[in-house]
Amino acid sequence: MFFQPITAKDKITFTNKEGKKETGNKIRFRNGFCHDVLTSVDIQEIVKAGGRIIKILDGIVYEENFKTPPYRDYILILRDLRNKYKREGNIVGSNCMKLLGNSLYGKSIQKDISTTRHLWNEATLQANFDSHIKTYEKINDTQYIVEKEITTEDSKSTRLTPFYLTVKK
Image 1 (tube, one colour):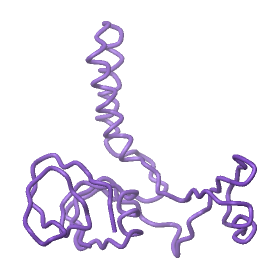
Image 2 (cartoon, helix red, strand yellow):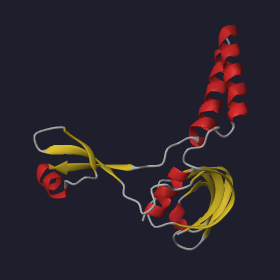
Image 3 (cartoon, rainbow, N blue to C red):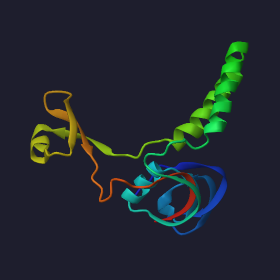
């Protein structure tokens, strides 16, 4: 099983696939334990690929229809600073505030993955067509891009984002 490497902030020591200790700034979850900051979307992908959450060390938990976004006051300060820097013609300051706001706010409100996309031929589409197919688009004479809903046992799940946890494969 392969996971795309995730860049770590600091150098970390981990066990590689041969069982030897290795130090670097890339994490691949298949190599054993790792500590990282993840969103609910990241966790869904890890669990879907066979990973297992052992312990949540710290986090922000909010229900599906939360009223006040996390970090709202901080985001508003960043927005005001960005507008101020724009008015002053400070492009670097404006872009820094934009990136800070996007990285913080964007991850905290990232939606859960609820669909998958597939490239199917017509026979596969007909054989697998059911109520979970949201859309399909013919891209050439023989192929379709199909968007299918992911079915879960409990669609009203609690979202955890962003937080620290330990993952073991």
